[in-house]
Length: 180
Image (cartoon, rainbow, N blue to C red):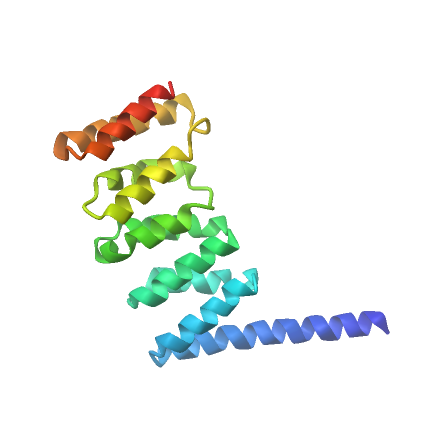
């Protein structure tokens, strides 16, 4: 009796998650991004990791910046490290320059250490939010980077300084050098 109730409840949960996913996909195809954003927010607030693949797909494919930002934040809140690669790709995409601060923020609670060399150049960005977020992500890696990674970070920052003399890059270089 208990087993049949459990299976029935579990089946309902699977059916509900599947329906929710289909609804989001349908809303996206109908270009109803406001409703899709509300659905994504409910995934985040319910800590439902079963739809992370859908959030990653939205992050990778949608042109709607609000929807993409909401998917990035939801993935961060769900702390799914599978989102790191798509977030790095989104950060590097010239077409998403207005959303970089959000993508960098989304990395904060994820394991991004292997991608720090892609994040560092944004310390010299013209956007204060992007600069600060990139610097903070680097700063969080103190005592976590290998000597080889520290050297790579130092080289990337030095190269950036040659093209961009922003003060925060110099501060970042001094910080990384102090980690040796």
